[in-house]
Image 1 (cartoon, helix red, strand yellow):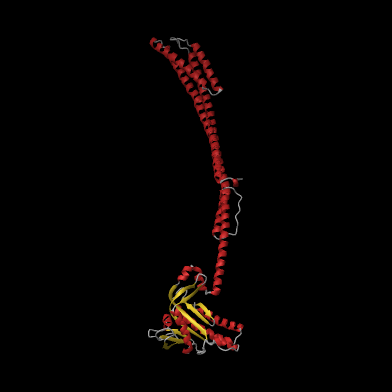
Image 2: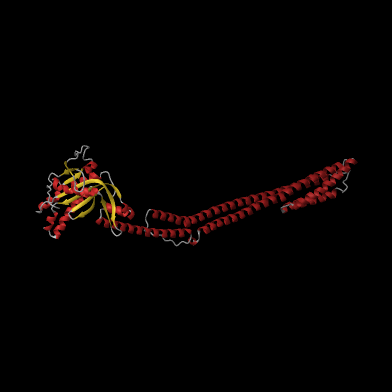
Length: 496
């Protein structure tokens, strides 16, 4: 039932219950204290005042006896004063005795006071109203002693009554103390009970919400949260369940988007180098078209005598042959961070330092060319085992500035590099036909890779300086360098 009550009402009811119990307990405590106070007032109003007025009556009796003695001495002047004092004491005695009788708190005390009243009647019968001046009757002294004795007994009876009042007050005080302790214990127990109920009914669901929040924060969204509560904690748990479900949908949507993005990148990788595909995917069309200009390494390669060879192969064999060659190019390029710009039949163009420039791009281009020659040599060994003739290739490497970016129209764009460096690299590949080595590189390529000294002498093993030559379409003589595997097949001048 408490699960459906709002927390603010639960707290209000709990505080109201504790206040009600405290109020009831306070009322009982006040009643007990009031009763103790009543007993104390009664003790003062009855036994104590009865004692006081009884003692006062005793004093008046003694004064009466003294006045009677003085009057009996025979001195007229003293006798007259004694008679006045006697009558005053006699009147005050009656007043005090009447007050003591009214304040009597028990029949025994009233009985003693009645005895005193009877004895004072005898006293009045013995002593004339004028108070005798010549007679001192011994009976008067005996009667006065009896009156004083009875008053003493009345005082003792009043003291006994006072003792009972004190005991009653003590009992009431003890009862008030017990009542107060019981009330305090009841308030404490009620508070503990209410705290326990509130802890069970409020804190435990809140702890559940905290655990749920920690679970969601940890990325575990598969466990649903159900709650039938109608208070604030129930609303919180249901809101967290909505949040969990929405986060789960968002995570699933993000996962699907990531899968689509991964598939898109994989598809791009089938047609483009993965590095180029990632760069195209990460940049806007405007950035792709704007491109950049920096130095790159360019490798051109071509199969010698491919036209003649292709004429003697059926389409399936030709496709297998070209595929094996391209596999050699792709493996060498991948090993050294090269990006295959394009395959054109039996030729390939590989870029180094794109789409982002890097310091070792020139050295990677030369190393890729050397590894490509090594892979073709291994391929030729396999072909020899199958009884097939050797394949000869030419490789040209150059280093220089180019434009890197996408070119094309609104319908189709193609990532490539443009510039004179591309043309020079292609011319260097052609130079392998007449240079007698399968790999020709420019001084710019060797200098950028640190493979040549300031005097132009090759410092890397296997490189030799070739005679300078003016390339077709360019003015001036270009310094060229050659490199060949020890077992590499010689290149000829057959047309590609």
